[in-house]
Every structure is written in C-alpha cells, then in structure tokens.
Image (cartoon, rainbow, N blue to C red; front, side, top):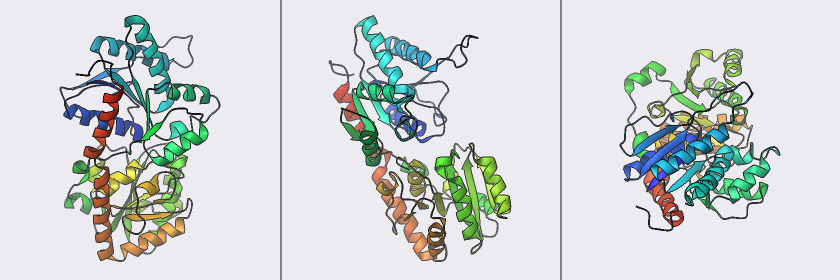
Length: 379
C-alpha cells in the first residue's frame, strides 16, 4: 500500500508513535510518505520505502499567523495525486484531521477519487486543546468525517465520547514499543559517569509542560535522595525547565540532578535507569512509561488516564494519586532498599512490555487500512 502519514515531527508521543509506525510499515514493504513541516525526530534511518514531504508555509505581511492548515492540505493533495496514495493516516486531530478532510474533498473534485482518512487520537488533542470552545466544532466535525477513528487507550476513547458528540465507532489500538530497540545492556562506562559511586539512577522524560507535574519529579527525588544516594536525569525540554532548575537549587539537589535536554537515543539512557518517574496529571496512554518498562525500569507514576492500562501495581511498578509525592517516595524506597525485589520487578516490567511490542500492533493498523482502502484491491 501507499500510505500518507501526517504527524507532528516533535518528541511528543503522537509524533514518536506515528514515525515508528511508518518505519515499521516500510519494513513490511509498504510505501510510506511522511507529510509534515519538519523531518520527524525519530525518522533517523534510510529506507527506500520511506518518503518525506515538507510542508512549506509562505509568509506574507498580511498574515500575523501563517495559515499552516491550508498549506498542509495543499501538500496532502499534491502528494496524494502525484504519488497515487491509497490512504491518509493522520495523527493528532488538530489540525491534521480537518486538513485531511479538506484535502479529501479537493482530490475528489480534481480527479474523482475518494481517499480514505484514518484519524488516530493521541491525548491532548481531545482532553485539552480539542475541548476549547474555539476548536471543538471543527474537531468534532473532522473526527466524525474520518473513515476510521482509533484511540491509543480505552481511557482516551471514553474521554472522547464523554466530551464530543462523536457518532462513529472508535477502535482502541494501544501505543506500542519496539522492544528490540529498548532491550539493551547498559554501558558500564556511561553508568559510571552518571553515578560514579554506584548511586541509584532515576529518570524522567517529558516535554516539561505543567500537565507533566515536573515539580513533583524533583520533590520525589529530593525525598528519596535524603535517604539513599541517587542521581536524577531529566530528559527533555519545555516551559517548566528553568523553574525546575531553580527548585533543584532550593532543595539542595542540584549536584545530583542533570538536565540533559532532548535525546534521540533515549534507549541508551533508559538502559541505566533503575526507576522512571512519571507523576503526570494526565496521560492518555503513557508511551514514555512503556519505553522505560521495555528497558527494564521500574515505573512509579500517577494512576491518571491510561496509565493503569499498562502498569501492574506491585508487579511492574507503582501508582499513586496525582500530587501524592510522599507515596511515590515510599514506593521508591521500598524497592531501592531491596535489590532482589528490584531485579524481579525490572524483569516483570520487561515481560509485560512484550504485550505491547510493535509486532503485535502493526497488523491491527494494516487491517484497518485494508478495510478502508480503495474500492479496488490495494497493491
């Protein structure tokens, strides 16, 4: 099949999943065309079945805000017609689903073809941005006009039906992880640099937005470090970073915390991780937690959103109520002081992650593609 994938090219979960999906589909022999304003960060390989089309947005003095959605729709039309795409798979409703609807109508009027649109909902496009009354009518319309709708968790599916008048069926296809990529033996030299005296290593990775409650990460770490020598790696960047650096100084843990910025090779960091902290206010699924589990890390998170769908409390990790940092500290100390239990939980986390391995998820998307592809058989 010839598949167009539309996504954000950033480190966010939707862009990561879309890129990894496209790479896996290309490995299966499909021709995958990425359509976005910048090359996705995870699109770091060469594959003869992968194509990248940059959305160019002209700037004119008339526009304070360049009309990206129009440029995106126009690029979709160009790629569909010139590369004879079988379908579009758009990730994140805003503005990709509405732009895809526009492109679909244009292609229909120009060449008489109906191009199926599959929309995958990822999280804040539904739970935060999409619920804004400024966007809600367009979001609702474009989702309902999609030929197929998927959500990355049961929780997100329920939230979508709760907050939008969606009239179509939403199919849950869980986020996935390439277990082979994250199942790495830790580099002793790297671990020695981070923890020269054998300290335990904790990791947090996010876009440092308020919904991630990064302040709780620092507070939890400070509570753990007061009892057990440890180090914290803060992976990512975002609006809360500078405030968190200040908080580290206030709590006297600056020497134990490293802000390492955005990292494409996150698997190398997770390989040396003992505990992965994710105290988010909401996670539609928790892809970062799943990747940590595949790297044999114990996840301590909140019980928010879709996280209970992937974490088995007391077996693969622990969950606490949002804001309950003391419970998170207690959970961490309970395993950091029990090496045998930590080893057992790390292995259990890895084994559980195998249920979400990419090889189990790709066929589910392929089945949808085949169902909604052209009226004539797809090649």
